[in-house]
Length: 266
Image (cartoon, rainbow, N blue to C red; front, side, top):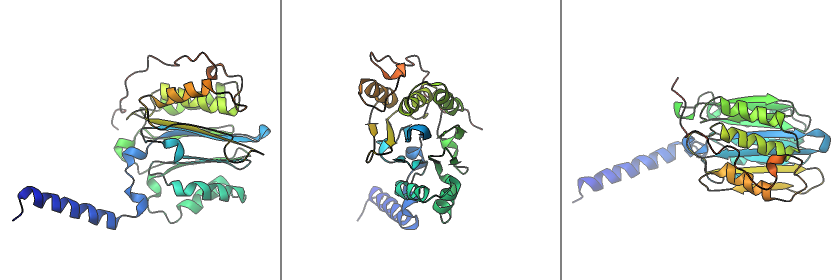
């Protein structure tokens, strides 16, 4: 004879199995752990492209940003689909416009309204697809594009995260890698992901260099962006420019950040 607790456990397991059978693999990702903020950018003159990202999601730099030398950069987030990374860059390399790449990726996707995607080619043409059906817990979400870059995020503390990311990218004097790091730091200092600061990463590719020219990750931390910024400051690499924020001695850019909190409900 089974106890009532055993019976409840059996029913719960049966329910979860039925849910797994009913849902496509891409639908099993929980929105509360796939949210993030990121930036994609290119420097056509120097044949460099890159992306940077931060999130409460672990090892986010390994599943959200994708870059390819002399092709461009792509990010997939909020119900992210890592298997789209290389195919998106393949389509870009074939000459597809950024918006046409999205059409290919999303045409048969039943959850297109839950995805947030960003892509940019070496001409600086950018496109963003926002998660218009994102649940309340994933707000604030938004995006901004500018000359040779696009920044986007969801599950943010508020609009200032995206605005600060954009402003920092435009105002920072330095290399593309410098500007990506400055943008990521500014977004984090403005609040970032309202759930926490677990992981961050940056990817940069350059024409004539196989694979990534620069790749740095913080996979699990209490303060991932700041830890990544410290790694960057300590790094000796040709991808770095004259940005003083990327040099030693390292100084915390925003030690008085407010505590994380979700924005007020709509």
